[in-house]
Image (cartoon, rainbow, N blue to C red; front, side, top):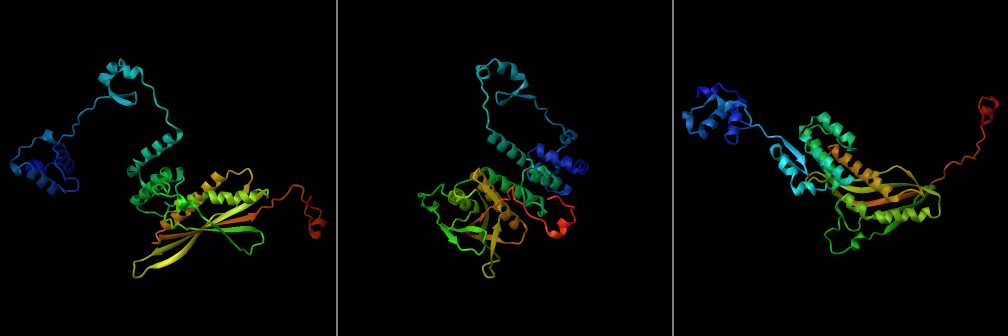
Length: 320
C-alpha cells in the first residue's frame, strides 16, 4: 500500500494500461489505488518499481514499398519477390487526392486548438464558424460541411420513378421596369433537403436563362430562395418565412451556366448555414420555392457621350 501511495497518478495510469486494467482514465489517485488493489486481489500484491517505469517497446523501422509497410529486416527479401518486380503504382485522380487530403486532415481536428480550427475553415472556404464558441461545435460544423461537399446524393436515388424531377415555372408579374421576367418554381414534390431541390430544378433554371439569352446579348440574374423555419415545442411553436437572396450577376452568351448555377447553390446553402449557426434556435420546416429574377443588362458603350453641365463646363477644368 505504501508503494502505491508514493507513485504519481501518471505512473498508476501507466501501470493500469500495461496490465489491461480498464476504467482508470477519469479516476483520482485514491480511486486508482483502490482499483489496482481490487484487480490484484487486495493489498497483498508485491509491486516493483519496474512495473511503473515508462519503458516502451521499441518498434522496428518499417519502409513503405509497393503501397504497404515492410519491416526493415524483411526489405531485402521483399525486393526479390515477383510482387515487387511486377508492381505498378495506381495513379490517383486529382479529386481522389483532394478527398484523401481533406479527410486525413479531418482526423487531426480533435488535436487542433480553436485558432487552428478557424485557420482550417478559412483555408478551405468554410463559413459559419466565427460565432461558434465551443471546440466541439466547430468540429461538428466542419465535418458536416466537408461531408456534404464530398458525398452529394441524388434525392431520387432510391425512388422508382423520375416524374418527381418535373417542375413547372410560374411567371410572376413585377412592377420593376428593368425586370424582364420573374419565375416562381414551387417545391411541388415536398423535398426536405435544400441541396436536393436546388439540384433538381437546375435544368429548368438553365433553360429559362438560355431562352432569354437567345434574343439578348446579356442578362442580369438573381435568385430568391423561400423557406419556412420553426422553433419551440409543440405547444408553443413559432414559424417564420425566411428568404435567402443572391446579388445580381451578369450572364453573357459565353457564360458557363452549369458552373454559374453551381456557385448560386453554394451561396444559398452557405447563407442558410450561417443563419442556423447564429444560434437563434430556428430549424428548417419546409422548402417553399425558388424565384428566378431575370433583368435587362445594358452596358455603357465606349462611344457614348454625356455632356457636362454648363456650370462645370464654364470652368474649363474638366476634359470631356
